[in-house]
Amino acid sequence: GNKPIFPNRVQGSLSQVSFTTAKVLKALNALPKKTSQTPTDIPALLLWQCADSLAEPLSVIYQRSFDAGILPSDWPQSLVCPIYKKGLMSDPGNYRPVSLTPNCCKGMEHVILSDTLSFFKPS
Image (cartoon, rainbow, N blue to C red; front, side):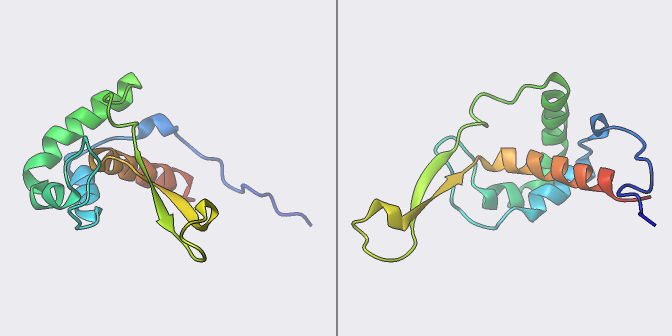
């Protein structure tokens, strides 16, 4: 016979995303340990080095932002950089765009992704 695609009913909702200090600390520690940054951002290396001090205030900012459905104005902006792939460097088609998003926003995205993935895991 046919097996159901979703054998278990999913309980809860994605509104259960929460930004605890522990989750934000984990997200900050997961950032790449690089000094690169966007023009309006804090380097990931600094966020990582100060993660213990920043996790709690960022968890409050993230939660309030998520609850209100509004991001700080410079977070949705990204810096698009062309990265060379192969072939003639003079051919624009031999480059791929890479978006550098603000590191503070990456921390929030990490928590949302983690909570979203755990939402879909069977219990």
